[in-house]
Length: 215
Image 1 (cartoon, rainbow, N blue to C red):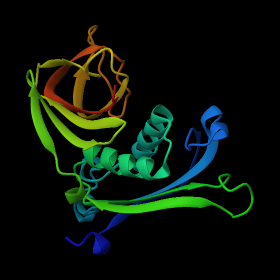
Image 2: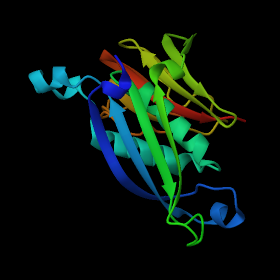
Image 3: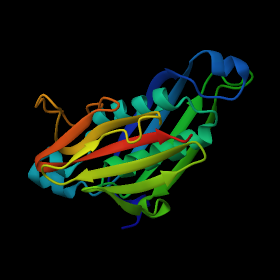
Image 4: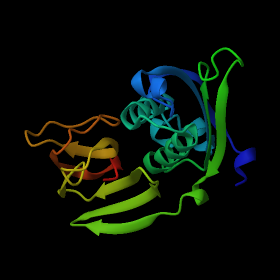
C-alpha cells in the first residue's frame, strides 16, 4: 500500500505545555506547542465491521503523545517527532505510516508566527530488533542517543517488571491485551503502568509500550 494514498485518521492542533528546546529559558519552564498527527491505515475493515479493534483510537493517541512529550522533555523537535512516530508504530500495529508536525509558536519571539518540524515515516523506517526477556518478547522499535522505545509482549500468565531495570527512568502503558497488578487489579488499555511494578498477563496475553532513558 502506498501510504500517501491510504485512508487516514487526523489529530490537528493538539496543544500542550511541555519542555522542548535547548535554550536555558526553554529548559526552565514549559512552553506551548502544537502537534498534528496523521495516521495512515486501512479503514475499510472498521468501516464495515464497526469494531473499535479494527481501527486506532485517536483519543488514546492524544494521551500517548502527551504522556511521551511530558516524560521526555526534548531538546530538539527533530528527536521529538521521530520518537512520536516510533512510539505510534510500537503501540499501534495497524498503522502503515504516520506524519507528525510539531510547532513551537513562542520559539522565535514574535519574529515569525511559528517554528516547526514535520516528518513522514512508514513502518519500514523502524526495523524491529527482537530479544527475549524471560517469557517476554521485547521488540526494540527505535534507539536514539537519549532513549530506547520498545514493545513488550507477554504470553498468558507470564510476569515481568514493566519498566525494566529499576535504576533506569522509564515510562510504560498497556497497548493491548490485559495485565493484572499484584492485587489482581486489571489495567485498562492506555493506562500508565506503575514504575517498578511486577505485572502478570491475563488469559489473553498483553503487550505494553515502554520508553526508557539511557544512562
